[in-house]
Length: 278
Image 1 (tube, helix red, strand yellow):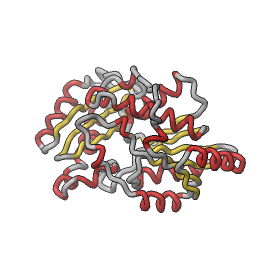
Image 2 (tube, rainbow, N blue to C red):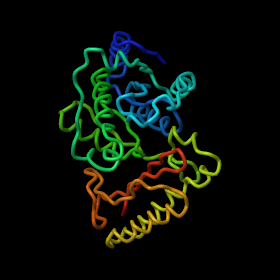
Image 3 (cartoon, rainbow, N blue to C red):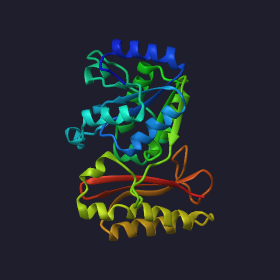
């Protein structure tokens, strides 16, 4: 696996990779890799494309009350995992490379970015859309792989690619979970043992609510009961909602492709999860 830290090195490596493989797939990450990230890389490798995985902790998507310095980092461990997965190029830009001093452009997204995480974390999706668009331009990938765990993020990126007519496909990969159902996240390591034992309840409540809504009954009652159940168990829900999958607009009852989305704080950790309904 090659490691690129400058744009000239990346361009040279990508040119050779395209000549050898024909197509390039990108897996954007912020590092602190786990089995969910490995699933993205493995699926990208399985397509036969040359695979580039980026590792960049993006300051633009962190709000003023979010601790950028606390985000976990493990470059040596990440590179070892990428090598094991068969990644061809690891792209590790610094902040000055991603955001040059004379930088004057960012990507503002409406539509699927306007609610939920967009409301809870103002400016977050501007940072996500901007860094991903720059990564797409740097790597010139034919496809990019994102996890469904961050469902809203996936829809925002799909909207950006469609609206800007960017020449790549966006591939969503199913959420990878612990045996007890907890969705894998780099932030899970900050859960205390007691919180870690409780955290899978978020997924359980999502599944129970999805089963209740699957036959088209009105959503208001089941959603309210789900929020109350989480609060009783020590969660602080930001939202627990039934939405249209692509647009993230609220639904009064389930209809394809409905999605249940949830964000809830447990101790110092904010957990996100989602599942399909029906």
